[in-house]
Image 1 (cartoon, rainbow, N blue to C red):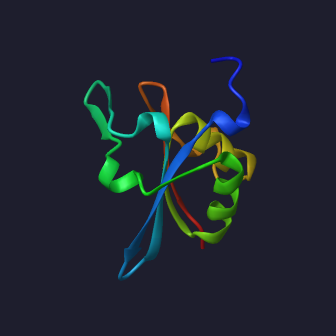
Image 2 (cartoon, rainbow, N blue to C red):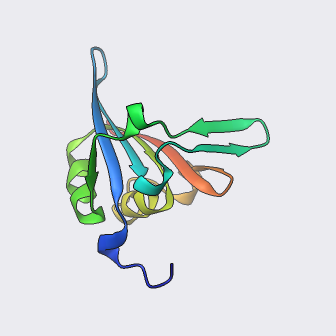
Amino acid sequence: MGSETLSDKKIAIKIHAHPEEGEVLAVADATLIGKIIEEGKLQLHVSDRFYNGEIITPQELEEKLQECGNINLVGTHAFSVAQKMGLVSEKGVKRIAGVPYACIYKV
């Protein structure tokens, strides 16, 4: 795992149209798709239906994050891209079983 390159860090995205809030970008590390993350009473289903539309690289994710105002994000790789861009910090993230999860709203 330590020899993983930036291009190996595949990220799944899917854009959802919302009639009142515009588009919502769902972002997840591709390795999390289909998994249920649990810690105590907290549970997050990283569903294929919600998150899996297109598989992209972290570099491509940077472009998508700049374009979207509402973002639902889960996973270490996805979080590190958003954090590097200044869109989210450790204070603004929830971790479930160590996996970062955040909702980002740009105004």
